Amino acid sequence: MPTYRDEIVVLRTHKLGEADRIVTMLSRTHGKVRAVAKGVRRTSSRFGARLEPFMVADVQLYVGRSLDIVQQAESLGSYGAEIVAHYDRFTSASAMVEAADRLNEAEATPQQYLLLVGGLRALSHGEHAARSILDSYLLRAMALSGWAPGLHDCARCGKTGPHEWFVAQLGGIVCRDCAPAGSARVTPEAGAVMRALLSGEWDVVDAAPEQATAAASGMIAAYVQWHLERGIRSLEHVEAG
Image 1: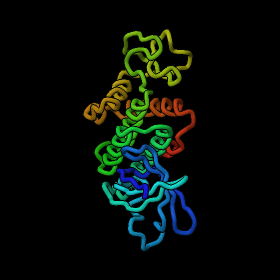
Image 2 (image 1 turned 45 degrees about the horizontal axis):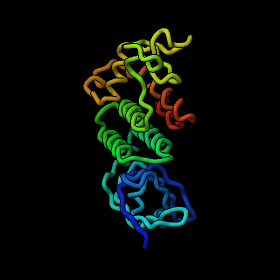
Image 3 (image 1 turned 45 degrees about the vertical axis):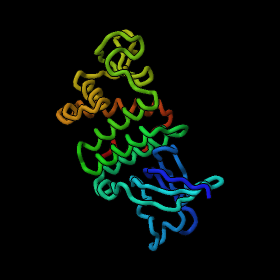
Image 4 (image 1 turned 90 degrees about the vertical axis):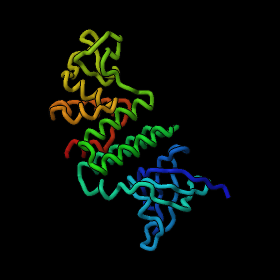
């Protein structure tokens, strides 16, 4: 039988029939996978709880004609319970898996998988503010996909920075000469937060004033949604929270 094993993180699920689910997963070595998990909605299911959103598992799959079939699932990271118990963690995690789903439409990499797992683990443990973990994930995931924003020198002409204008359509922070009318102003503090989120300097992020982290979040959301062309619907709930 054509079967394979892989580590996966569950992005989303859909009901199928009376007892089955279609599970969309980001795997470590096979990219994004859609598979049928038979009988997982029954209370007697052996691995239904292991295939909920935000869960990390080692799975064995059978290669089907259009959708693969989940044969086994062993838990590697039970992050879902701690995430759904906190609204800010849940909305941030929802935005992360939605972005991962969109960014990995074509070809995923092990780095994208590991980045998402690390972000969900940090959310479940409450290591930092949930929105900051989301922002850091979004910046790094975009960078892995070849869309790293310019956060110091001018993203349009390359003039040495730092600069004080942000234009998502032009690739990030730009100089005064390149900034069109109505461009968002970037304070030094907000610029420092964005650079720290991208590089993982959490001491800088955690110590930043709330106004700077909020401003950075708005620019990151604008940048990601511009480059993905369609909005990330879950971000609306993150903003509301």
